[in-house]
Image 1 (tube, rainbow, N blue to C red):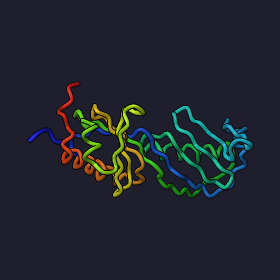
Image 2 (image 1 turned 45 degrees about the vertical axis):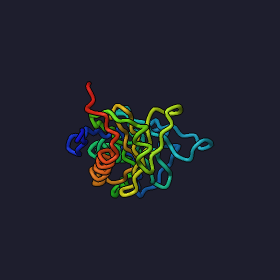
Image 3 (image 1 turned 90 degrees about the vertical axis):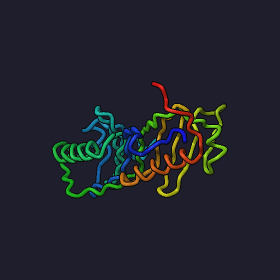
Image 4 (image 1 turned 180 degrees about the vertical axis):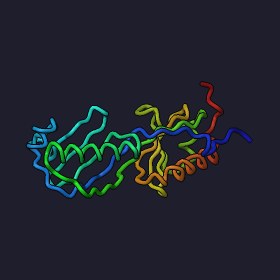
Length: 191
């Protein structure tokens, strides 16, 4: 029968998490820039860009809404938010008592541990696109849950577009099922 990819064997790591936030406060962006060291040029962008040395960034808007990007876990996201709330209170004199969080995008790197014939996959699988002269990876879209995979012949993949952590296993399971049914698996990758 040939090599199959099983959900339990797929290596995965969150590379980026993007969340929309609402702090329910008004922010004076020139003050935020001056006191916190954020970048603010309203002629270029309506928000303040607050980069943290930990590798994540807040886009802060005067209505208290924000985008947080660059965190690699939900724990890191909550720590980043708590640190910002503390800074807002101690340095800006703004007490944040409520925060709404909505995940906009999860980005994961995956390792299927197999070699994949991308030409075979694109001919067998609907909603896949492969143009090796433009990009070495194949793009494969699924709709329930909505997500996109960038698949490389090495079996390494990038999964983008999910908004709920509960959908990660469902999306990866659909990829495994599709790969197994397509006959595009060449064999186990020799590392």
